[in-house]
Length: 482
View 1: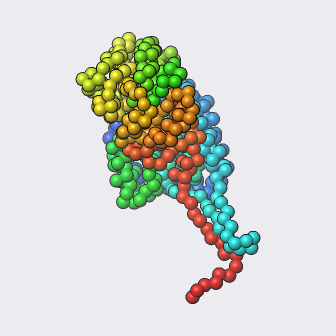
View 2: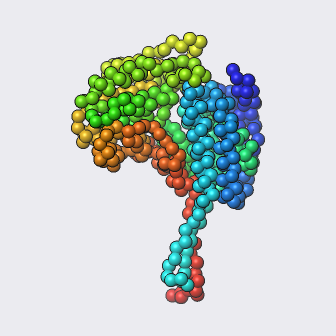
C-alpha cells in the first residue's frame, strides 16, 4: 500500500469526522469500516457559528476559496484517486480521470457563480416612480447525505453550490465510503475556508435521520435510493425543510436502425459497465432496433469479452469489484432471477482474479429479455445489461416511459429530427443524443417521477441553496385609503 495512503488511513482511524475546522473522533459506535459515528449536535452548532461568518463573506472571497480548493484537489489527484479506489474498488483509471477532476471542476464552476451572483431591478412607473429589487440570500445550515458510488464527486456537487450561496454545510458520507470526503475537508481548510463552514459526520442512516430532524437544518440534499428519499421527505415535512433528492433509475438507451453501431455499442457498455455498473443514471434497458439487433449483439459480446477485470490499482484495469459483500449478494440475486426469466448472453458468473480471491467480483452480464422481466423493471445497480428489441418509434417510446423511474435516457440515431423529437417525448430529467452518461457541471442533473426532485449542478443548483427576497421601494409619499 502507498505510504501516503497508509498514513491517511491511520489518521482517519482516530479522526473520522471534521467539525468546526478540526478532525475529531466520534462519540458513537464504530461503523463497520471503523470510522466512528457521532452525534449531530456539535456539527450543527459549529456550522451555525461558521454560517455567521460565511454569509457575511464577500462573494468574491467565497469564489477565491472555492477555486483554491479546486486547485488543491488537482494537485493532490494521485493520492486522492488512490484513496477513492481503495474505498470503492473502482478502477484507478476511473478515479484518476473522473472522480477527483469532476469534483474540482464543480468547485471552479460554482466559484464563478458565487462571484457573479446578483439580484434584479424592477421598475414600476417611470424614472421617478417606485421600484423594487431582489436579493438572493443563503438558507442557513444545509446538510448533504452522500452515496457510495461517487463519494468525492457527490460531496463536491452538494457542498460547492451551498457554499457559493453563503450557506454552511454538513456532509454525511456513505458509511461504506468515508475516506475521500475528509480529503475534501482538508483541502477546504488549507484553502482558507473559515472553521465550521464545512463539516463531516460519519455514520449510518441514524446520523442522516438526525440531521433531517434537526430544527436548525434548513435544507437536506440526498443522493441515494428512492425508498431513502421517501424517508427524507417524511422527516423533513414537519419543519418544511428544503429538499433535493437525486434517486434511482431504470433508464432506457434506444438504438435506432440508422445509428453508428460501434458508437452505440460503446455507449451501451459505458451505460452498464463503467464503475462496475454502480451508476444511478445507467441505461440498463437497451432497446435495439430489430434491423440492427444481430450486428449490435455480435459487436457488444466481442467487446464485453475483451474487458479487463483485475487489480483496481492497475491503470489498465477496466472492471473492478462491487463496493461490498452485501451489494454483491444483491446483484447476484438479480442475476439468478435473470437466469430464470431471460436468455443469458454473457457473464453471470464470478471471475477469478489472482491475488484478489476474497473480493466482491461479478462478471459484466448481458441478458436478452422482455419488458415484463424483473431484471428489466427493477434497479440492480450492477454490471447487468438487459437487451430489448423494437421496430417502431411510437412503440419504443411508450415502452421506454413505462416505468416509475425517470432519471435518464439516451438515443442513438443519425436522424437529428428524430433525436430531438425523442428528447421531447422521453420522460427523463437527464438525456443524451449519440452519447451516454456525460454529466458536465454546467448542466442540471436530476430526475422525473420516482427518480427524485430538484436539480443538482448548473445555475439551477444556486436556486436550490438560496432564497429570494423582494424589496419594494417607495420614492414618493404613498396615498393610503385609510
